[in-house]
Image (cartoon, rainbow, N blue to C red):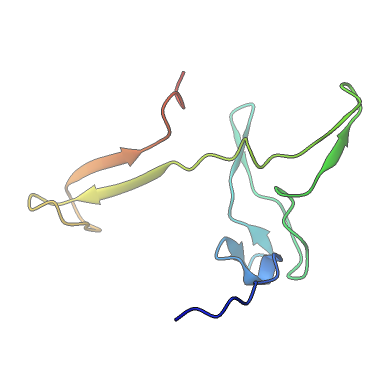
Length: 97
């Protein structure tokens, strides 16, 4: 049974935090470049924080814009493998246009 304890939403509590590199593993694609944000372990999630957008004069956040794309390789039996096989991709509808 789960306790109702709420986990503090900071980097060190997130599975996407790379402690060795001090980076968030969410990849930002910007003009063809892959960017990972440098973060501290006690930082709150950048992607959930609100920010002021000076061009629109509004408060916004990135939480609606984050999308997950997954790649993996399966062998002839349909099991995940690190070797040769068929590359599979999973992405949100409309991700590629």
